[in-house]
Amino acid sequence: MTGRVREIWTAPVAAAPMVRLPSAQALTGIGLAGDRYALGGGTWARYPELEKQLTLIDADEVAAAGREAGADLAPGDTRRNVVTEGIDLPALVGRYFTVGDVLLFGSKRCPPCRHLERLTGHTLIKALATRGGINAAVFAGGTINEGDAVGTVPDEEAARRGAPVGADRPVPRLIGN
Image (spheres, rainbow, N blue to C red):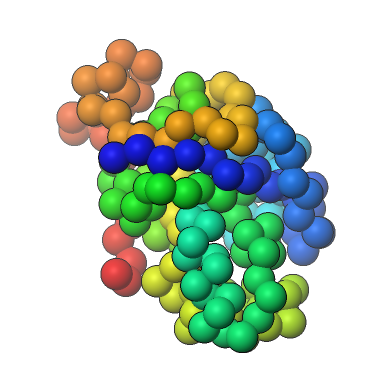
């Protein structure tokens, strides 16, 4: 299972406009350098560490949600960090995967919230309910670039890169479908 990074987005503080970047530094155990969650200031900053480091969403799912909601919705409007194409993101929950050379763990699905509706001015909860992407934790940092490959890795490779496996392996939070 492989895909590609289409866009990268960050915001310096909660509710600030998202800024598109050609690349971003993923910091182990923290998130994207300069992003509100890596800086401890995101709207959902009180969530468990593994659930707020990085978010990913599929470009086709954003387009479908926009059509369903009757909204001109751009990927950056979703407030997710990494926009992908060609990979089933929900299938990555509970698995290790790479974005370029960065090792991530899919910690949970990322359904939309009313905060997103307030910021965009569009009714998106229903349209993004199963299309909101996923949250991921950074287990081995590095640079993420637009165009980088996204793909799963076996636990053995994750362990070689220092990630916990076996009884110490992270446990995803399963919510919805």
